[in-house]
Image (cartoon, rainbow, N blue to C red; front, side, top):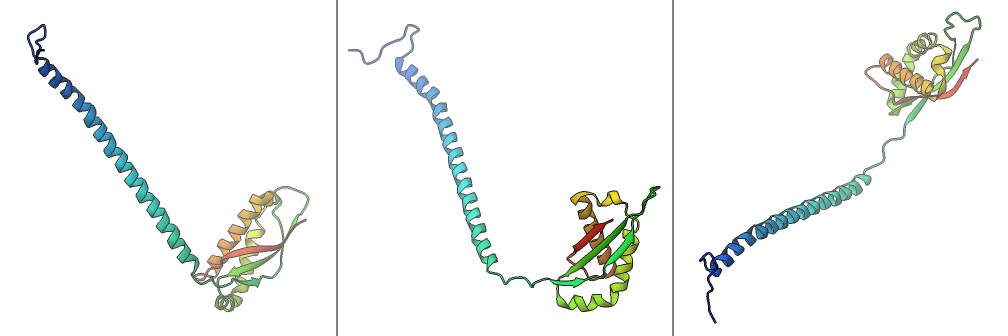
Length: 171
């Protein structure tokens, strides 16, 4: 039979097959691009997995570090003040017992001579409070943070870790 057939317009079928191959090439390039993207994605995931593994490995080494020193607690004298009563006939009192949490024992000795200053700071601040300032846990949290800030100012350059409440009574 005939090896080459002519199309109606006079072109070879081999030429049409070559054109069909050229049209198939972009599909092939697309699949090569897609393969490259998949390979890049897998490499990225592998890198992230290794990074996570390395972080976990370092975390285990960090846990082996020595335990921090236990905190030291210093009792403050009890403070009793009358609260600010903006136009109210009834006088309300606030009684507070607090403990200072210190980072180390050495600071305990440095703070003792400063106790009158700290007590004065507490009293002047607490006398300006209104009973509504102490409402709820948010009010007590603000009070704790403000007392911690004021103690740190009074004993600067030293710092306490926290002011902890032992007793709070509003009467």
